[in-house]
Each structure stands twice: as structure tokens, then as C-alpha cells.
Amino acid sequence: MKTLVIGTGGREHALALALSRDPQVTEVHAAPGNPGIGAVATLHDVDALDGDAVAALAASIGADLVVVGPEAPLVAGVADAVRAAGIACFGPSREAARIEGSKAFAKQVMAGAEVPTAMAHVCETAEQVADALDAFGPPYVVKDDALAAGKGVVVTDDRQVAVDHAAACDRVVIEEFLDGPEVSLFAITDGETVLPLQPAQDFKRAYDGDGGPNTGGMGAYTPLPWAPDDLVADVCRRVLVPTVQEMARRGTPFQGLLYAGLALTSRGTRVIEFNARFGDPETQSILAMLKTPLSALLHGAATGSLAEVGLPQWEQASSVTVVVAAEGYPEAPVTGDPIDGVDAANALEGVDVIHAGTALVDGSLVTAGGRVLSVTAIGADLAEARERAYAGVDLISIRGGQHRTDIALVASQEISNPRKSDQ
Ligand code: AMP
Ligand code: GLY
Image (cartoon, rainbow, N blue to C red; front, side, top):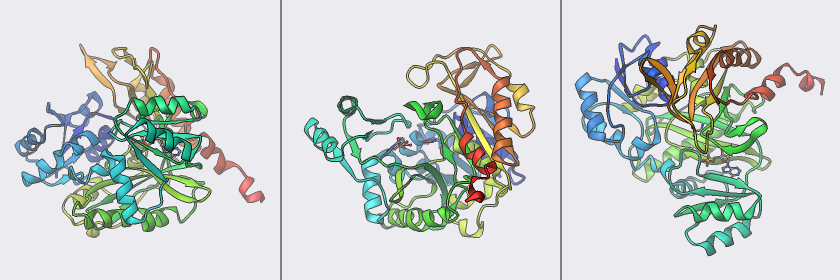
């Protein structure tokens, strides 16, 4: 099978890497890609937001499957254009991608599917904002209704900060605060069959101890030793399947990756958000654990034959991903700094360095974005996976580079902690 991955980030590198290791895949192409993706795929230059250009590229290389990674091309209808050209495409239509593209639309779908989520008000005026903030009280949760790459959400006890964020957006969704740990649960679906992947946890805040601003994600791990045993089955039954059915009922079937961002609150599991694509950096850790050939799952979803593929199979292991970000991320990342040590880190056992914001300038690797790269490691348990991932991070040097030191720390201690059996 010839595959074409669209995008430039860590998620796309992880997808291309898994496809390059898949015995059913004969060729991996990517566009526009990045230097890491270029090591495992043939790169092509294309405007990822131009559906006709992506479809033409796919046809020219004889692609059997196009995988659209990021949300922006999906919301721009790139998957529709590829399918219109008669080529199998993994990723939802423009209409279905609105489940991520508009938080207000997602709330309507959840209401229709009776999916548990935070109570919310859509606000367009300063009066509506003030009323909603007062109705819910602190901590205030204010979300830009438009796509903002995970950075459009402000959670704060400071009412003025909440008001200012709302004033800077056209339309916001203000909602009740959800307490409890967050879980990312991804499902691959062809619009009918829903196959859940292994749950993961993402670290959204910039600094250790969940301090600092929200980011696109600073690290991730899977599996979750602390999660309830029935989590996946429960979320499938109450969230993923009803949502996929509701999308079909509305005439906008969802085909691709449905990402449920969940809060496990004291009052039960609630959906924080849906995304219409693989999450980054959770995907790096999840795909490192996948035993089923990735192409079978993606092609099955793209062609409506997912029921024949069966449930994904996983390594009996753990995986940890640590993101290395540029100086100034997320507010004002500095680019153009040299990156050293990638090859040495890649050579470590169980470790893959996944590129995101990197570029080659005169043959040297330099930073070119906020999240520069991530180090993903697999190990027998979370403690070993963590050790390996941080050993990789320690070998990489970027002037001003920053990373969290506590990715998967608490979860890795939980397994070796005898507390549970003492009780
Ligand atoms: P989102 O872009 O909707 O995923 O929001 C980004 C992050 O903001 C989430 O991962 C949460 O950490 C936080 N967040 C969003 N909505 C809520 C909420 N209702 N209550 C508490 N935290 C939230
Ligand atoms: N890891 C969060 C996201 O991809 O949106």
C-alpha cells in the first residue's frame, strides 16, 4: 500500500514512522513534512490547506491511502477533495470536522447524543460574558469558539483575565469548571464501527506541577495504571458510539479519528472537548505501543471496512513522550537555534526522537516552531519508559530549550507504590 501523510508536526512524524514500519506499506510519502519525517518518507511540497493540490499530489504518486493529520486541512475540506478524486482518505469531511472546529457545534452534537459534558453558554457580547461568568463562578473557563490549536482556552480564578480573554475573541463558550484527572481516549471509526485505542494522558500546562499557560501538550504516557478497568468500555458506550451515531443521524458521518478529551470528575466522566484528529503528543506514545498494522486501521476507516479489522492489539509495555519546546513557548517561541544530540538520543534502546518544529538550514538542524521535538520511549513499565525518554532528552541540546521534568512521574510511582495493596 502506498500512503501519503499530510502535515508537518510530531503527530505526522509518528504516523509516518509507524507506517514505515508496517509490513503492508510499500511507500510512505509526506507533505509538506519536516526533516524527521523526511528520514522515513519521501517529502513533497504542497499547500496542506489546498484540497485540490493535495488530491493532485496523491494521484500523481498513486497513493492508496491519504492520511490528513492536522485539524486545519480537515476543517478546510481537504479530505473531501481527496475522496472526490476517488482516493481513500483517513480523516473527516469539512462538515464532520466541525466537531473540533466549533466548540458550539460540538456542544450541540453532545446534547443530541446525550453525552455528558460541562454546562456551557455561548456568548457574543460583554453582557452575556458577564452573566455567564457570574452564573458559574470561579474557576472560570473561557474558550475561543474558533480553532486555536489548544491555546484558545483560559482557565483562571481571576475574573478580569477571563473577561479580557473573552473580549479578545469574537465568540466564546463559557463553561462550568470540571475537576479531576484528564484522559485522552481516541477512537478510529469508519462512521459506523468504533475501535477505541489505548487511553493516554496529556500534560497541557507548560511547567512542572501543571503550572503556567496551556500549551498544545508537553508530554504524554500510556497506559494509565490508575484508571478504572471499565474506562474504555464505559466511554465507548456513553460517549464515542452515541457521538458517531449522532453525526451519522445529522447527515455528517464522522470517519477518521475521534478524540475525546475527558475529565474524570467526582460526578462521573465528562467530555471536555472533541478533536477530529490524532492528538499530539499522545499519538507518539500510543502508536509506539500498537501491534496491529496501522495501515489496516486507517485504510479500514477510510473505506468503511473497519469491522473486518478487529480490535487493535497492544504491546504489554508502557510508553512515555516528553516534548522539548523552544525558548519562549507558548507565548513567543524563538526559532532558528541549533539542535544537537538527536542522533545520539535516537540510538538509545526503545527511543524515537519525533520531530515537530525543526528545519534544515545549510544541512544543520535548527528550531522552527514552538514544540521542537519529542522523545518517545517504550519500556517494560512507566518507570523504565520515563527513564529512557529522559535519558534521550538529556542528550539533546537546544539553546533556551525547555521541557517538563514530571511527565508520567506520579503514574510511574503509583505502580511501584505498595499503597494500594496495603489498604
Ligand atoms: P480544550 O481546548 O477544550 O481541550 O481545553 C484545553 C484545556 O483546558 C483542557 O485540557 C483542560 O485542561 C482545560 N479545560 C477545558 N475545559 C475545562 C473545564 N470545563 N473545566 C476545567 N478545565 C478545562
Ligand atoms: N494533546 C492535545 C491535542 O492534541 O489537542
